Image 1 (spheres, helix red, strand yellow):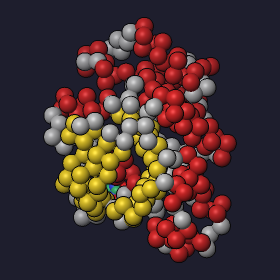
Image 2: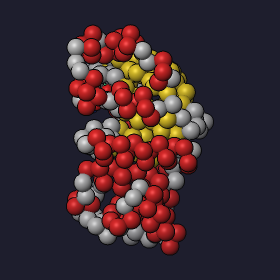
Image 3: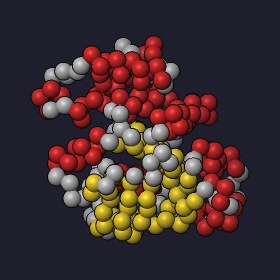
Length: 257
Ligand SMILES: Nc1ncnc2c1ncn2[C@@H]1O[C@H](COP(=O)(O)OP(=O)(O)OP(=O)(O)O)[C@@H](O)[C@H]1O
């Protein structure tokens, strides 16, 4: 469970990324965060593992406060959270295997991490995770030889070997074609349904949010303006979230941008 209590984030330049957010994300939910560019989606997602430190309020991950955590506790909290983000991407010159294995680093001391002292189980988990995202044949491939969609799926595999019950996905399908988008989204759905992992995902596509989520949260200027079931996201509510211009675009444009 992730709980936001009166969370605000003001960036050093004075921009308010988040304003008084109160939310509870329960175990096993598939939550999409939508909203205009600059609404605060990435800030919200990254606040969960303190990649973006919040200014006021608190976030608890399975009952443990991230703001009060010392270094060791923060490491333990971060182990519970897998991050799929294009910005914190793969080590391109390393093999797929090494990138996926790095999901285990949170379980070892710095010394072991530096020397890559992984166990037989770690290697087995890596093979399994790659199989579950359909990339068994890419084990020894260099990561920069993969397509964008394959790279996203390697990131999913890395989150799987990390055995994190929570997965944060920061626009994982932003630059993918429709077929690959569906594959990545299907992977996330499977992980959510079969492994009961909690998924928190930023999406620009309303159709995808509607199709895959159990719950949609919309942000506008750092505040929550909608929080509910996909069916409850009516045109009227969309207009409040995105402004009137949404209906001047074709549905296709909105979903792909
Ligand atoms: N490091 C930063 N320093 C200053 N302002 C920032 C920083 N990161 C984000 N912001 C600002 O905070 C606000 C929220 O940004 P955020 O990236 O969370 O939005 P977003 O909804 O994820 O946008 P997008 O859909 O374009 O990724 C924006 O006004 C943005 O300009």
